[in-house]
Image 1 (cartoon, rainbow, N blue to C red):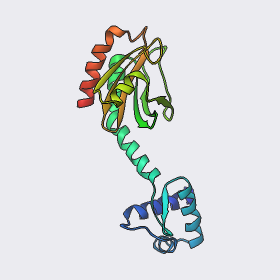
Image 2: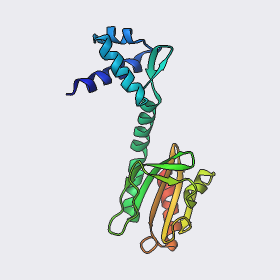
Image 3: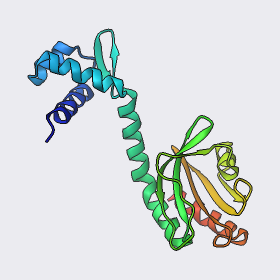
Image 4: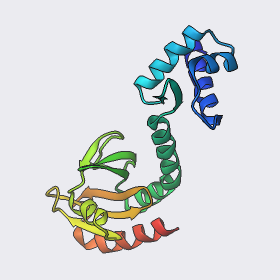
Length: 190
């Protein structure tokens, strides 16, 4: 085990259990680590958003909450992505709104070729047809090649994000979108 990683997680665990922010000396004392070591680790953790400084004390930062939230979001919706991708044969995505874009936070690739893909961590414009409509309040929306010519999609709003399926029109023709919309809406409600 890498000592710095172990110590960093011990610091994060301590801060997660503390009802109030802790100072460097208090963290060092409770974890029985050198104050200089704790200071360096806290500064590194602060630089990546894992902790934040408040009046010379530290608490968990927004990056930890975001990671925990994304982990829970993925655990909740991964079975839906797998099911719809398996049934439809096309790639299913889980995305989360981030301003004018949505971040791809999970994907299950479709079977066969060619497939539509967007790696986890990439972004799609929030203005993409079906995605834009569900972000504007529609429960389910279809995209008949409006965003990308030759690519059809169906999106559904889910708590914490958007689940959508996309495929080339030759494999996911417009005539199938109503059926896929119905099934995706069912799976999102389970």
